[in-house]
Length: 210
Image (cartoon, rainbow, N blue to C red; front, side, top):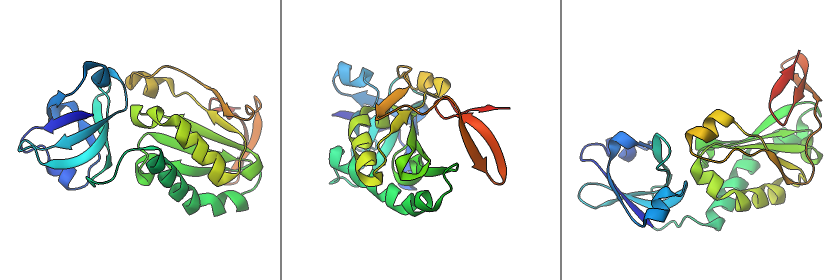
């Protein structure tokens, strides 16, 4: 477990609920060298007086050095947390997925809003269609397996695909990857309707055909 010490006075935004910690706010990071180099390592965040502030995911390769998971000292960062947060996010929006037209794309998980900073998940084709995921931070990337397991369990959708945002993942020091995480890949082109507009899209890349 890493220990991130925040510079004196720089903790104000965290105490106000901000979950992003930039390099300029950090005084020092203590812990094993291999943990410091691993994107998404668990860390305790403390102020200059060594008082607990939060638990976070640390990434030395990103300008956003850490993303807060929780401000509760007694809430562990584990598989159960990821599954709880995925479940809560899905329950908020699953009704939208079920009532959507087969050609609509529906937001299912929206990163910070759902306590899963850097994770974007969209649904296409309803519960029998595809879930398109983007893991855009070291924290959620480190917990990819339980997140995908929870998505499968909570949505009933058999097909989960990871789309690669090359710029975002490079900025986080993450390997570039795209492909099926469960079930089948989406076809090269599908019909999408959005706000009265219709177009063809490659769900794997987000590319819209003209």
